[in-house]
Image 1 (cartoon, helix red, strand yellow):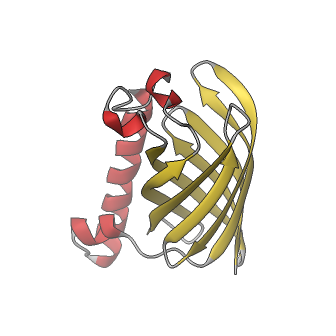
Image 2 (image 1 turned 90 degrees about the vertical axis):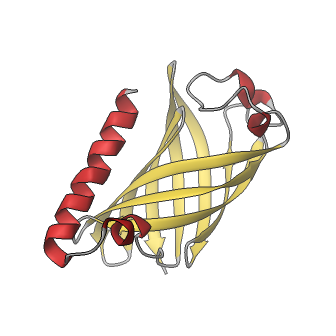
Length: 163
């Protein structure tokens, strides 16, 4: 619940800051903009319940908001996914990225993972499952940023290279 409050506050702050500067509508701000073509590498992460550290090796390629990614899940199995992502610019260096897609690689075991919404439904019983997440992106240089990505039950950390 605490994560949800933080995310909602971040979104409301973003909307407030952007709407004051550019007089955009709520929906236009929420829609965000397409991501720049990039490659992300997020090699470490942790579960949130219980807290443990993982070597995820998440690697992603993004082209015009369509992202293809692969990572090693906590069972050491390969998981592949495709997502549609959008970016909300908060400041010159800081952005909030959100996405939704599908993944393959858990084969129904997510029904038993606490913290995943709708985990007891048909969405997580088969080999193909939904994936969603939020990413905090801090631009360190013109073509390089640090990222922290949050999905239900997992935080993942790494870098993004803009092509």
